[in-house]
Image (cartoon, helix red, strand yellow):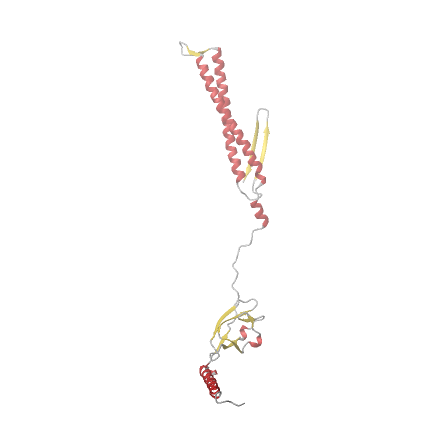
Length: 258
């Protein structure tokens, strides 16, 4: 190829530019020995007292075969995690920082320790016992019903006693109006006054009896209510309701132990 006198300066200029660019690139590139390395090395030492049956080593979550135990591994520099696990032992986790290829980093595993003991807890209560406590005691339902009945009878007795007490007072007042004192100081009453006085006494007796029955009924209702609401162990309570009827009167007795 023949280069004319006009093309020669251009070719020389291009060659000069290429040589200058190559020289600058060589100056900007550091030698291989001065380049920072992203790789490092790690020696994993696994003593004999650590090699329990079923020992599993993992480096950064990846399995580490036993063939690589006790050898120097080429890994990236930076933080790493070494895990050692074996059945019936607590896991051992070691955090490692690999600095670079110019340093020989190593790690030695410690003997594995037993797992921490589980906290002692009280045994669960039998299911039947829990159910018996949670469910209402239906065997005491008659006692509660009886407490309402006895309480109602007590209220009626108090009401009857009050009514006959008022009636007795009125008849006593009417009887006094039919009586007067004689010269000797004795009370003389008409036939109507005597009858009213007798009625007043009868009404007073009925009032007294009704008050006694009413008070007993209220007290019995309170006792029955407390007993029916109280929790006791099965088989520890016994109740007996015994009626007794005679020629002159009838009684109803309630006996219980708790």
